[in-house]
Structures are given as C-alpha cells and as structure tokens.
Image 1 (cartoon, rainbow, N blue to C red):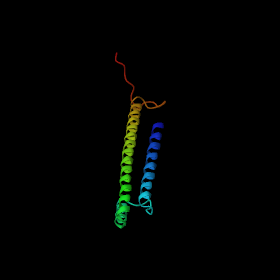
Image 2: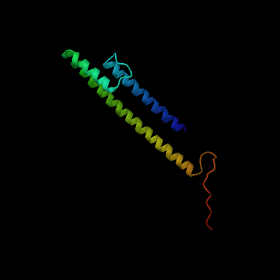
Image 3: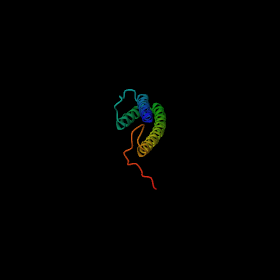
Image 4: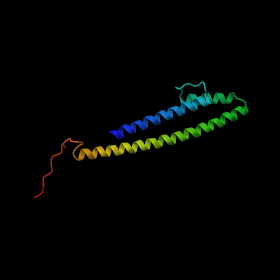
Length: 120
C-alpha cells in the first residue's frame, strides 16, 4: 500500500504542476483571462488580440505564442512520462497483489485454497 500512496502522491503533484503551468501560460498571453476558459475560447481571444495589434506587437505576440506552444509540448511530454511511470507502478503493484493472493495472502492471512496432497 505504501507504493500506491507514493503513486497517488506523484500523480497529484503532476496534476498540480500541469494546472500551474497552464495558468501561467494563460496569464502570460492574455492577462485578463480567468482560470475556467476552454481552449477554444482562449484561441478566439488570441485571434482577436492578434488582429487588433500593430505589426510589430503582433510579431512579439507570435513569438510568445511559439514559446507557449513549446512549453505546452514539454508539459505534455512530462505528463506522458509521469503517466507511464504511474501505469508501470500500478502494474507492478497489481502483479505483487495477485502473487500474494496466489501464495496464501499477505501477513498472516490464511490461504483459501485447499492444501496440496503429497504424492506417495
């Protein structure tokens, strides 16, 4: 169970990190955008903002957008790595649990399987 708690802790930390990074990106691109904005709404606001800017500011925003896309790609890769790690840990925990049940349970619990008879 200790492994499961550690897995949950890692997963929760990854989720908090992802939310924090997404909020930073939103606030960095469009400061007046709240936390509950969908990707479609954010894209529409960015299009409006780009269209209303002079050419030199539009270039600057495009650079910031490119950096934000890069950050999101890194975040996606990190979340995928975390997901793969959690999936592997859950798989190992499940194999261990199945083995424990197959070999008589864990820590003092008696096996429900009938005892084997010795061949004479």
